[in-house]
Length: 550
Image (cartoon, rainbow, N blue to C red; front, side):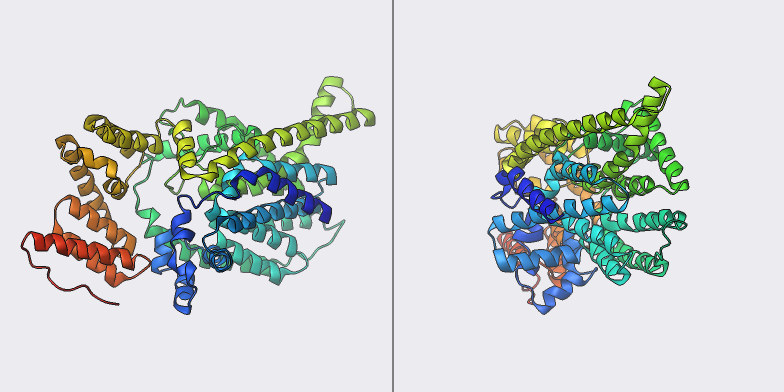
């Protein structure tokens, strides 16, 4: 068994070799690279990491203290050198595959099938995002802790409860472990006549208490940050159809690897005749029926289908998210889909053989079918390994990262904002505005990024551009002013919007509130205030006070 772990580690490093020196990209900046709380783990900073209402929690828009504590430990060892962070991510991914192998065995999956299934998980191209992206340490760490909790529960329930709590504090999608442990207990209770087992139901109830406490803390962070953003699909019927359409997209990616990409932006299911939505209905109905059928009969297969469903539920889009889909979200669905398929496969194959032969297949035919299945699995693993190796190059540089998103979704936010920036550099204000409006229609609300982009200086005086920016600023101000407890970042952004409207007094008030609020942007907001006061002096206005000190 330990040799399998060594093999998984070797395979992981072979596939992800191109990403080992990949730079800090996108979210890595505020999670690691420029996060002063992570760089200097003082007592005050550690309290901020653990506090669900702290300025840091609002900055990262999630309550995930284990994730940040892991990054803090990494920074003390690796500093700004990226290779160490990548190595840790790779080791955790290999460990997750190995723990999954052990759980497969405990649910009656044959060793060879379990090993092939875990290798499939290990090399799947959708998992590249969760492994090669430094700040996605939370995904693999949460998976390791969740699988550890499921494995520990039968014999060490106290340890299992601790691991489950830590998993939640690494990433909310670790919630999957709770319905899975309940399903495991149900199946084992149905098998009591063969193998009586004490499933420690009181400890499972303790898991529920941990989840409730975590959900409250996470909601505090989410409702003050990402929850303030307008929903991508405002109409309820469009949102529900899109949820089911995206569920089918995940199934297609799981089976084929087709459609993997950073910053996925599938179109909404606007019509009742949307093909993704319509095709999802029979497949999802069949999956739901199979889950209930096997659960009623006390089969371990049901456990894995529940694993997949629970992995999808938190990111389904019922609760609006900035991006409706992401490769990394499949990380918590794949184990369930693989495990369920491994247990359902032989039965379905026998059913097909019976229908064709009108008789029970011979042992030799069964052996031949298993051999064919193993060969096909091996081919899929090799194919996915090559695909993942190529995709790991994307995480070498930000330009590769953004270019892939623009290439795969030419009508998406990334493509349109890049198009707008290029048009602005060429002095084409009308083309830049058209591209920005298209990005706005897809949910883009980062006017602060537009203000910081030097490309737009060439068209800053153009009436069509000024009209767009003024309208945009008004809409964002109205949205942000509704937040009674804005974060330091939100207040800084609000001040920038007031500057767009040339309202220096309102911008100054917002910046002073940001300084009083305190947080990781203290130095930046002080610079902002100095610049506002300088503008007021130039205009011959009173500064209205000195810079507050903390």
